[in-house]
Image (cartoon, rainbow, N blue to C red):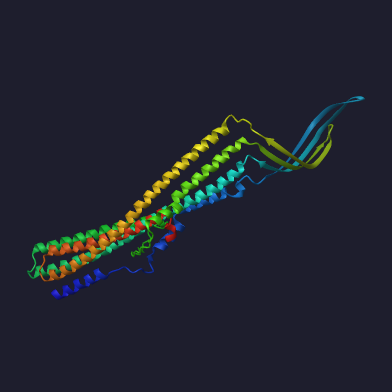
Amino acid sequence: MKVKYQIILTLIMFALSGYSQNSTDSTLKLSDAIYVAMQNNYDIKIAKNNLRIAENNADILNSGYLPSLVAGAGGNYSNNNTDMTFASTTGEQKVSQDGAVSKSYNGSLGINYRLFDGMNRHYNYQKLQADYNLSELQARAIIENILIQLIRSYYDVARLTSKIENINRTLVISNTRYNYVKDQYFYGVATELDLLNSEVDRNNDSVSYIVAFNELSITQNNLNVLLGRNMVQDFEVDTTVTFSLKINKPELMESALNKNVDYMSSLQSKDISGILVKQSKSGYYPYLDINGKYALSQTNNDVGNLLYSHNTGFSTGVSLNWNIFDGGRTRTQVLNSKISLENANQLTEQSKVELERQVSDAYNKYINSLFVLKVESKNKETNQLNFSRSVDQYQLGQISSLDFRKAQVDLEGSINGYNEALYSAKIAEMELLKLAGLFLDEL
């Protein structure tokens, strides 16, 4: 009996020391999850559609640079009983007709174009282009925020998967220990208290497994929401982690000031404010319009001075309008736009200071996370060695059942602590890359 349980516990220790989850064909890899989210996530879809709207707004068709072409046509028909008196050299002449018909037709094709509008159209087009660039940055910010949520959720699933694997191995050991103590109790070697303690420990491990499994199910559902998938889809994730960040702090800071999406958005907003200042001054200048039209018209009357007419031809014209004084509206717009530009400058400086702080904090967090991971790795190795020796001592009766349980719990806690540190460090790395504007490049 002693040899049998020694073999079982030795196999368990082999599993604990050499276990690693291999990625299978059914495993959802992080790259696959990102691809699915980019295609299915609702917020990302909306962001892409908003970007399409901004692209349409920035097109030349919405700029005011193109002329307007207007076509018009009309017709009139009347049928009246008419009594008319005309003055002539021979005296008055009376005309009376029932059912006198009068018909007229007209059609025209005109073109209108504003040659000069005080540069308002020029700056408006610049603003539309700048608005599109800002929309691109806003769409990128939404995508980055969704993907960082996705990565956190993905690694939460990986952490809980590893936790369940750890609890499951602990539960196997607890079951083996319970059966071992039960046999010892049968032969009078162990006490009833030892048996009860081993049973309680086994039950506690079972409860921990159920709780962790339920937590994993909830986390998988959260990940499915980000993926835009059905809740019933079950899946596994790759629990392996590799670190890729090899950039020092000054390089990260420089990259953040050139590529961080939030800071670039503040710079773009400042540029738009500068354009609005120039556009607001267009009200000080005159407007010059040109128009041309080709028209035809025809009239047919049964009675009257004009019985028939038919006209075709071109007409063109130029008009100049200058609103010399508009009640101060233009001046007010200029003053307010300058104040808005000053606010934009202040917000940009504030964004820069805040970004530098965030990068510094995120870098320190990442470095500390790597240190904690190294400590937890060493702690896990120590507890694995301690548990291995405890197995031998427990078999020889040199330690009690409670001491063995403590070694078992310490090992489980150290493995969970290592996994927590591992995934926390990876998330810290991704958050740092996001601040540095390198996030999407690394995916």
